[in-house]
Each structure stands twice: as C-alpha cells, then as structure tokens.
Length: 234
Image (tube, rainbow, N blue to C red; front, side, top):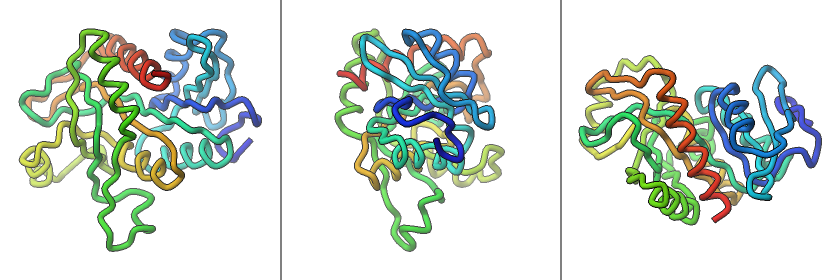
C-alpha cells in the first residue's frame, strides 16, 4: 500500500478508470463490474477492482484538480504498475457547436500550469492522448450511435475562473471544453510510457450558462464508462 492508496500489491488492475468523485467510482464499479471489491478507502477516496467481460479493471477516484490526480496517478503507476489510465469526468463546453450531454475525446490538453510544470521549466510541453485508446474510443462511440467531438481541451487549475480574456482565447483557438485534470494525466503517462485518455461529458456550458441536472449527469456518465471500457480492451 501507499500513502494515499490502501490497496495491497495485486489488488489494483492494469487498467484504471479515473472519475474525480469517489462516489461516482463506487457507482461505476457496482454498475458495470462483476464482483467489485473495495480496495481503497483511504481519505475517503474510494477505489474498487472487479472484472468486465473477464478483464480486471480498477475504478479509482482521483479528486478534483491536477495536484490531487497527480498523487493518485503517480502511485498507481509507480507502485501498482497501472498501464492504462482513462479519465471519465465532466467538463464545461466552450464552443457553440458543443452541446450539453455531448462526449468529448481529448486529443490534447492545454494548460497554464500543472504539477509537472517545474520539470519542463521554460518548455511548453504538449501533452496528448494515446492514439490507440483515442481511436478505440471513437469506434466505441460509433457503436453506441454517439458522434463525439475530438480535439483540444483546456485543463484549468482553478474552478472559479476570473479570466474571461483567457476563455475568449480558448474559444478563438478551437478549444472544445474545460476541465481540471487531463493535462497532468497525459504528462504523467508520457513520462512513464503508459496509455492515457480523457473521455468527458459536457455537463455545463460557459457561454450559455446551461447545466445538466444531477440525474442526467449520471446517465451520461454511464455512457462514458461503457466507452472507456470498450476502448481499454479493444
């Protein structure tokens, strides 16, 4: 076990789904996995391991923001040898053609800073998704009759944003949506040679102010879990 993950060696699968909310991790594991076992509840950040179509899968909450995700992903990779890490979460839409409930497959993630920024110093490192996972996720969307958006997103290190000028530049440069974790996930995956992807549901929109009610968020979250599982084992 590690400081933040109480699982024993062998209790974490090679494929890990990463919702931010620990209770979404519980719901996803109990809904989609066979025989899910609680393997982590340290600091209330729940993690479960079970099987999906005979494949072992862990669903581990990662918390909010890149510093929190960085802790869990570092430990999952370095101490438990996780090979495939897929973020499943919500985001704010930024483009007029991106609507509530739409799925975004994040090819790249721009950011002002991440916990990894100190390593790169003056370099603006461009974190990207794993191509194999991205292609498989797109195919999984097609199989479900979903037309996803594919492109760049923005990983913000603040939730209550006070930079309308920056948001305007994101929109101008084609950024599809904003969330708070993917850039660090992609940087860590690149560093350790692992596969990573962020699959996101648009839960609100920065321009229109629209937002999904909680029940609709759960249904859309289910689509993301199915897409992620199919992509991981394509």
